[in-house]
Length: 512
Image: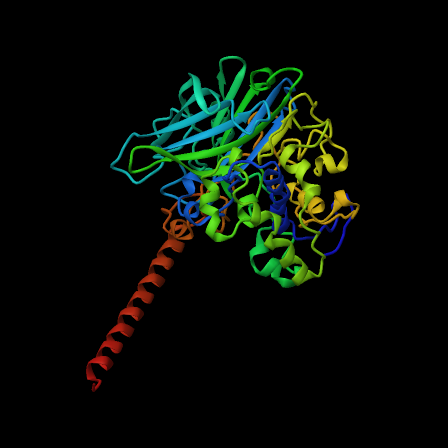
């Protein structure tokens, strides 16, 4: 691994591996404060055995930031279903109907959510006699040709010590933006996205639908730590994949405890309905990549069913983490001394005088100071580069959480200045300037067109061109060309039939 400039040119590293160590210092603090036994952290892309087999319930990332074009509000984005292949039909990507997709907000630092926004989904099918997701070009969310649609409800639950105080239905039967099948099926997907943005009471806004996966990083860490010689870095592994996004924009005063205490903690969970008819938590996510690279296999599923107020159960996993030792063994980068107390305040309590609430209970979640104005020119390393509106003060879409986490884990706060990274510094697509901010999903028809066609003409196969009726000007074929082609095809057919007969006779005469 080699250091690189702050600007990002030529940055290389093991960020994907070591960012999980952020939780190590954090959970150590949980042990120091003698929390009751328990566990908490986050899910990520296919990080635990059980959840990897049920992607509809798998959180991938959570983002929380003061809205750049509406600074009196906070935007929260939570994503599900990792590695959506855009052309993965005919069964494209829907939210589960037997799940509760929850966004939790802790507004007083006690590690318990005081507000819970719950999203639940219903699926609607117009015609069950076809295999098609859409039966023609889709021009609106209520288009008769969009055969499979979804709608969602939002319930706001206010809690005290995790017991519901009130429940309010804030949205009902709101349409979901569909999977982006392709240009022929959805010629103006941006229009569909716009129709899926829904205004709620109290100047809030919601969105649910498909989006480009905004997380940018090199995931080839699992091939023996980037190939064992750093030959596998600099590739945005998630480029071209989509996710299902839920986005919520709410006025700051609706989620903050008060003007004097503007810091909120945010995480998301998925609860799935079990055979007993009850909902059980199967996935949780706050900070990125925690469960993916910190916990051993035996603890990952238990980790996903945990809660922030029980952060001590996995203390041993993180006070003596496997990851830094592996890095030291392979790349000779000395592992910091344990326990990692330098990480405790930043990643479990929040940065003092920035996003640390008073009387904070150490727990793993994104923490955001809603009173910090958005940066006019965001810096991808956030707080490390003097931009207090960025990670770890919340998480913006453009924040390079991999590089920032790596540098802190490798001793930036202990005086070991470094510019390490994974050589992936930004998303492959530009983010939107307005809510819901995530980039439009990659379409299923993104591959090359048929030979002899372009984006301005109808896409047809070469066979279709050859069979075009005589006199069609687009192909330039005349009667003579068609006749010659037919004759050639007939001659080829005779040769094939003759060859087959000769092979059959030889096989008949063989002795077995």
